[in-house]
Amino acid sequence: MQRPSWENDNGASLQEFIGYRTDAGGADRDRAAVAAAESWLNTVDHGQYAASWQAAAAYFRQAVTPDQWVQSLQTVRQPLGERVSRQVQSATYQTALPGAPDGEYVVIQFMTVFTHKQQTIETVTPMKDADGAWRVSGYYLR
Image 1 (cartoon, rainbow, N blue to C red):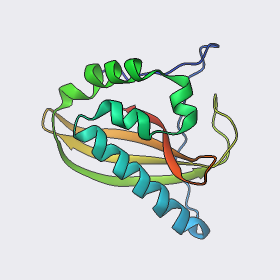
Image 2 (image 1 turned 180 degrees about the vertical axis):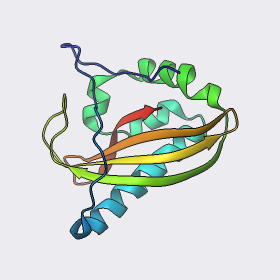
Image 3 (image 1 turned 30 degrees about the horizontal axis):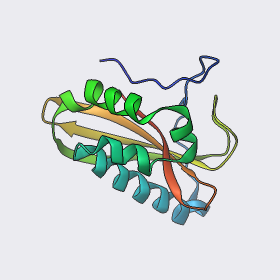
Image 4 (image 1 turned 45 degrees about the vertical axis):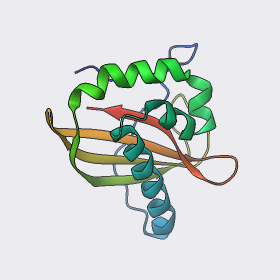
C-alpha cells in the first residue's frame, strides 16, 4: 500500500516520524494531543474528508489543498473500510521534525484494524497551533 505524501516545493515530506520516547512531565499535553488526534480521526472514519482538512492545523492546510486531501483519502483511506478498533501505541513529544517548522508536536502511533486491512499503523501528528489548540499536521498510514 502506498502512503499518501504531502510534499512542499522542495520535495521534502510534510512529516517524517520519529520513535517513542516517554515524557512523564508532559502527560496532560500528550493527553490533549491524543484527544485532538482521536477526534480528527473520527471525522476521517466517517468519510468527512473535507471537514478533516478544515479541522487540521494551519500548517497542514497551507501545504495541501482541500481537493488534494480529499482525493488522497479517497485513494488511500477509503478502501480500508470501516474502523474496527484503534489503540494508541506511542505518543512522542517533539519540538522539531524534518521538513516542518519548529514548534510543539506529539507524534502518535495507533494500531488500527479496518474491515479490509488488519494491523495498520496510523501515525498522526498534532501540533500546537497559533491559538494554542492541538490540531493535526500530519497523517500517515502503514
